[in-house]
Amino acid sequence: DLLVSYQDLMEPESFLVINTTGHVFNSTLFRNLSGDAYSLMFSEDLQHFNGSVADYYYPRLDKFLQDRKVDSYLSEAIHHLMPLFEGATSSTEDLYHEGAWGQSNYWNCEGDNTLKWKNGTRGYKTIFDFLSKKFPNPSEELPVVNKTILGKHVTKVERREGEVEVTCADGSTYLADHVIITISLGVLKKHAADMFYPALPADKTSAIETLGFGCVAKVFILFPSRWWPRDINIIAPVFSKQELQDYIKNSKHGSWAAYTYAFNPVVTHDRMMCVWFSGQSCRTVETIAEDQLIEGLMELLNQFVGKTYTIPQPEAILRSEWWSNPLTLGSYSYRTVAADRRNLSNSDLAEPVLDDTNKPVLLFAGEATHPHYFSTVHAAIETGRREAHNIINYIKNKP
Image (tube, rainbow, N blue to C red):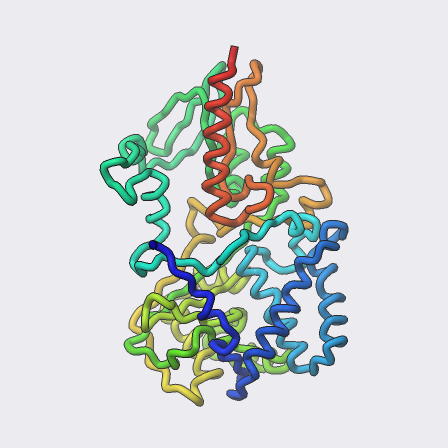
């Protein structure tokens, strides 16, 4: 009784699909068209294709649009939106970076993916309450918090005979028989070469270098009052090629705002919207001043829906900073063309480092180490459990 489905809010009738002139498109037709267009990216043929998702997808998208007799305006709008949606989903820089074979290895979860906490105040922290058994009965909570040391910045991981020494920035050190590494792939890319001693095996280093770790940003906008209708759950701004060029040329506050696929009202908050960005626009969103961020988003909103609605100035804005955060340096992982060409996958990143006695001394977990659910929270949870069980099994079975 903790979860509620928001599937009804994703019905096409709740979409406002609109262009820069204020023209509103048939949301059902557009939703069906864009959904069918996006599904081409997940064809079973993808696993047999040698190249990027772009090389596979764009010719098939063009044929699909021609076969459907879609006019040039909507065809250009679909071409603009599809990589933005995939970028926010996978964190790829663009479809030319994403490997076709690697993408085909991703698994979507079965069931209802719109489930949310019924209590709108719950967040990701509730997952930790479940994992530690703090919820639903606090008296059964596992002593995880008491055994967790926060505020420690690991700077060196050194393998010694039979054990591992972990050194932190404050000079403190910890010795262990086994260490599970859950550092983000972004941090591994930047620091693995000077963090691990001796150096990590060549296959591990190659996986770190070639797997992708992109930038995705979420921006929450709080308005003093709700100005959009209650039957609207997504505002999708669409551009033709010429409209996009004109917007970029004439924008006063930054063309980066044109590279979002939707404004999503937050269903658990009456006055809040969420906007997603990926790739270069994500990095811009994270680094520009807050007033510039607000002005850019307001310019885009007013361009599209300002003729229909009076949009008040936001009260507050909150943005994610996963790319600029030195402890993440990005959002989540994806499979690249380079990884496909070298036959490297998330499983290579997951391989443990053994000592001379075949004891697993360094074990790797985190979303980027899951062979099929990479980029997700459930992958992070599953791989953490996987490596914990690997240690337990080793201890049980060692001579």
